[in-house]
Length: 105
Image (cartoon, rainbow, N blue to C red; front, side, top):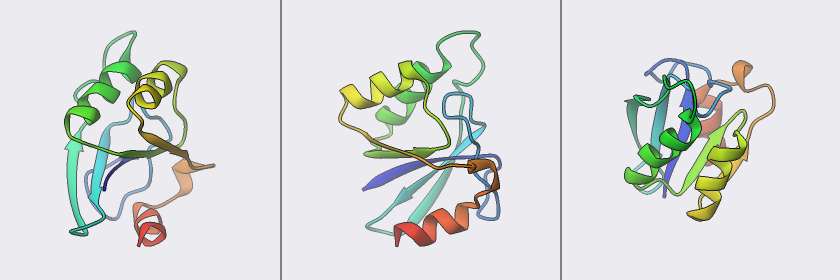
């Protein structure tokens, strides 16, 4: 399973980005191979629709789950319509990527 995790910096020692659509980066974690790919969110700049465009970008990458601090209603609709599981993490800005990865193993 490929899981997208919103993060502030493209490295393992970062914390989560509490935003989904406007997140700076995502860690794409593959639960089968245990590999991580860091991707920049190239869709986080529009004045409107960042959540929808970010969702589409990640769907094109084949994700099956998304973890973030919060999902806007439009992003949640796009992801939900595609059958993507969404997990919101309280106080995401204080949660490390490493702790999320440990939770997934």
